[in-house]
Length: 167
Image (cartoon, rainbow, N blue to C red; front, side, top):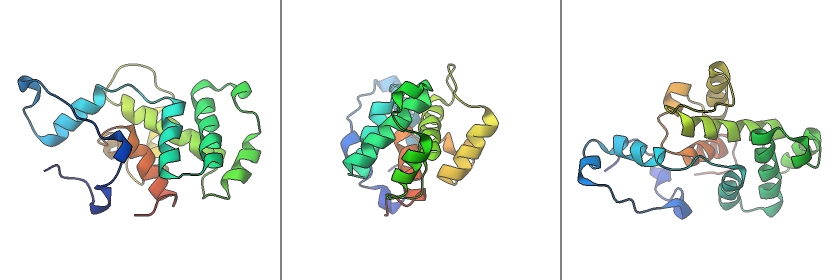
């Protein structure tokens, strides 16, 4: 049994269930290490995948499309990708919960950073910013946030902290 998951997490990520086959030399060790190993073999999330996850957890097409546009902006910083102003998006997001356009962008970056933890490569924000994001959106220290297995847990925790998903 894998420890560290709460009772409300049993049905978490129903569309993300996968069967993973490990070679004998990979299957040794504690379950957390195995989960980390498996999650690090996955691709990093892009805007469409992040938005698809939010759309599954909060099934409102208007919210999902607006969130996808914010995720695209977070990764590209291209104003042409976002047809409206940040204030317009924030007013629209106010109908669904407490996150603003800036918050959704930060959550996308945080999911990326957690997925990249321990890997060499591109980082979008500085270590102090990662720490601030982790505290604000996950109610966790960055050190603990890095222990989350997969970017889905970051988005899920942020949705719960923001009141979008109730257990």
